[in-house]
Image (cartoon, rainbow, N blue to C red):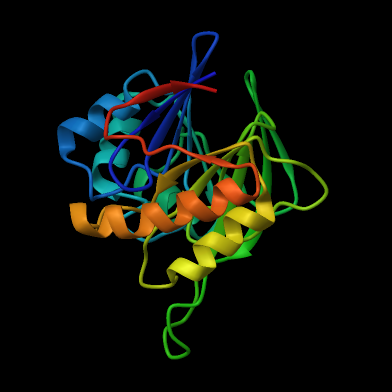
Length: 220
């Protein structure tokens, strides 16, 4: 399976001619999202926030490619169905389930976005483990239970986390490999500070951290 990292939390996974995209958000340029979604058979959305779901480009893509299936938390899926109308494959995703998606097996975890502030309501958030190999938690630090995760996509920087929590998340999941997501607000200096610490602490537990540039591909 091959993973391509796009801006912020968007990733594209390809395997045996099948394409799955997670979180096409609005921190990507339109051309970048078009590239990420090109030929997509499935799109997974972790939650409603626009940095993970850029609605108009996704809706335009679905109208042009009605065979593309979308899985999202129920409230998100309902909104997409309302805008699209009938004839589109938009499905509710619930935590603690298994999705068989034409060659991809996806397990779901979590259910709730991480707390930003007590006076800001949380929203539904689903983390996705694809083919038992790569875990995309969306905006959460939910640790998949009862299994090992070879590749973790770690939310590096957000209004709802701090560096110590990211380090503890990596240590708790204990993957073999970590790549960064949720990095769209970081400056080059910010990357250096956070990645130095995450990489160093990960290494203490036998975990390798590897930064991926926008558009970079890696074989998992």
